[in-house]
Image: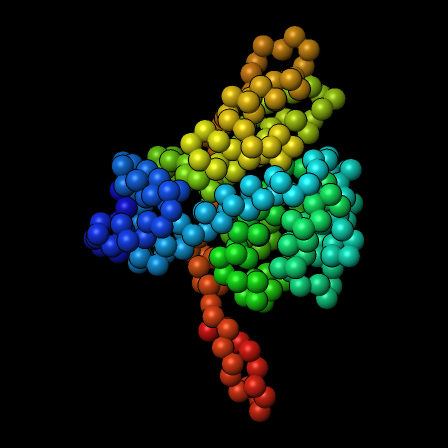
Length: 262
């Protein structure tokens, strides 16, 4: 169930429903035996918004033209990023972070990366849309696109044992008997878009059955051990990110009128 503060004002929660995906998430959480606690209504509103932006960013990345590649074959637009030896992309000095992320969506064919990097890109794109490009450029300055679990800027949370995965969560399909000549297919990081529909970079938008079938094609010869969806579920810390949902204001600082966020 959902708890706001110390009570559950269902009539107020119902006012947040602005889309079918938001309705589905609220209904899923309300029916769950796990208690989802929020300090106020805005915290729940922000989570719903960011979850929708994550699924939207995943769908848009899927249609951007960006390709799948192993870390040692990754590529990026060097006008915005420096490719490092581990295959990750570091933001160039003097480049606005939000524009560098947007370039991936606008010039996808210039980019190639693994599924873990795709998840980081999706998260950043969603955060930009949720807090504004200006705020993103202030608070997220040292971008390094590589692996979601090692991202230097985002605070990430793993779901507790009894929580349910919702649209916008990241999950993982494991391929335990992967062909040793194809280690990049040892698993697939995916964004849950809706019930049994996922985005995985390199596979695309597909059901769990199709993703498992794709991974099974990359197993050792004569293997009988199937790929499977793990219990691993990850998402950004929504409450941490909500603090950056600030509005730019003009203030006099040191005798000059400057734009700040408050």
